[in-house]
Each structure stands twice: as structure tokens, then as C-alpha cells.
Length: 323
Ligand SMILES: [Zn+2]
Image 1 (tube, rainbow, N blue to C red):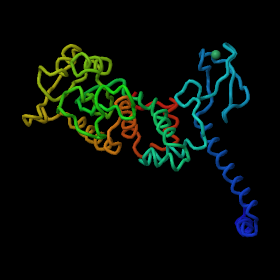
Image 2 (image 1 turned 180 degrees about the vertical axis):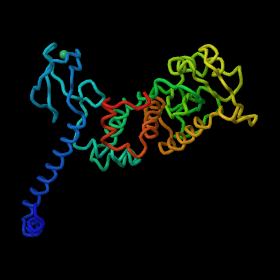
Image 3 (image 1 turned 180 degrees about the horizontal axis):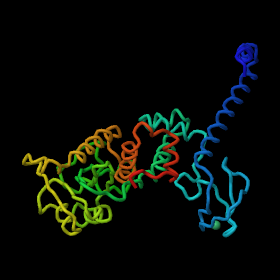
Image 4 (image 1 turned 135 degrees about the vertical axis):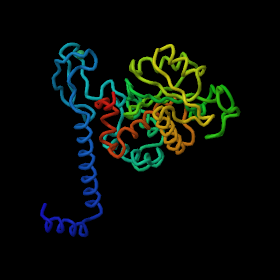
């Protein structure tokens, strides 16, 4: 539109009746929503196979819920690009990108909900739907010098009513017992020098669980670095797997061995993770993996993590470069 025509339109607003202004507003909002949904549709892309039976013979089958629909020639069932993804059945597509944008900027779930005009309960659900797949994106293989270290998070039943195994603790409180206890959830962070990062919540803090995490992850020629000596669970796990292990001893001030073996990158990662987690004032243990994944996503993409990228990650259309 020409600038002068646009100026005329703007001036015309003054002479409109209240009902006309209302109609104009509704038209603009409708237009914006359509654009946002179209953007979501283009980001989720076109399915190449049936999500039910994986047959690739599919054909367009109209539209439903704002998305192009397809029908499988094999099983005859219909589907769209979001069928069988964590986002299937989630309403208000026109607000998804705005919601994710607010999150990428570090806004709280309550504030983001308010801005998007959805209720807080729905916003919590959205957050975890959008985090479900990113939480699974972690390094599958690590090689060279690989640093590993454990960190602990307070066990929390936040948001869960009833069936509490103990009295609820004030949020963000301290464990009664320090260090290893049932009130702490151990998390193993594994990071190689190329930055490939993986982490795992350990069901129990022992060498068996650590071995289960490390064995598929470590390349045969990896050299594992950790804190603590030959009898520690990480050392035992490394021996059983058959990879080389170098142990620093932070308590005794031995931080680096032979100039290269240390766990400074893993420790720095812990610090950033803990610092970032503080804003949530304690997270529910059942969602801890989602927060760990969120942090890995921030670490992997940095400033490039915008709403469009997050959306494609949350439907599984993107592979982390370290995979
Ligand atoms: Zn099918």
C-alpha cells in the first residue's frame, strides 16, 4: 500500500463509528492470527509418511484444526503433521510462536500465559509439551577426553497434590541431610572437549547406573576424567566398561593431570545449569529431565534459539549437530 493511501486509512479511523472501529480491529486480529497459524503450518512441514503405519503412500485429505490433513493409502487413517507428536491436540496455534518467543527470552510461565491470553494451567502444560522432545536431544557418542561429574538436585513433588511420601517442603528449601540422601536426585553430566553434552538422572547413585549411562555413550578410545579415586563409582564403571580413566582430586587440590585431564568444562556446565535453574525456585523432579533438556538446548543453540527453531525441535524435525 502506498504511504499516502495508508495515511488516508489512518485518518479515516477518526470518522468511524464505534461499531466500525470494532469491526476493523477484529479484521486485523483475524488477519494476524491467520498469518501466525500459516507460519506454524510452514514450520511443521509436510509429512512424508503415515505416522500410524509408516507407509509413504499418502495423499492430501482436506484440512482440519488449521492444518492440512492427509490420508494413508495403506491403513486408510487420516492424520496431520502433528499427529503422534507431543503437540498433537494442542489448541491456539496462533499463539504458539509468541509463547515460545516469550520463553526463549526467559519470561516466566505465568507472565507468558498472561501475554498470550491462555490460563496458567494450560501454559504449564504447553511448556512441558514443547519440552518433551528437546529433552531427548542429547549427544549419543562422545570421544577423546570426556569429562564427567555428578551434581544433585533437591527431590521435589512440586505441583503434585496428595500421595506425598513426606510432608511438603517449602519451595526451594534445603534438604535436611546434605550430600547423598533420598532427598537429592543425582544427575550425571558427560561432556567431551568438542562440547558434545549428555546428562542423565540416575535412579540410584551407584556404579551400575553410571555404567548404564556411560557404556553406550563413550567411544572405545575415550579417556574419561572425573573427580575422586579408584574406588569411586565412576572409576569402577570405567573399569567395567574398559575405557581409560583419569581421576583428579579436587578435595586435595589436584585439578589437572598431565596438563590436559581435568573436569573444568563439566564443572562450568554445572555452574551455569544451577545458576539458570534458580529462576524456577525448585523444579518438580518428574519434570527435571525437561529442564535439563531445555538447558542443553540453550547451550547448543545460544542466541539462535528462537521460537521457530524451538517449534521445529519440539516436533522432532531437527537433529542436534552433536548427535
Ligand atoms: Zn497408514
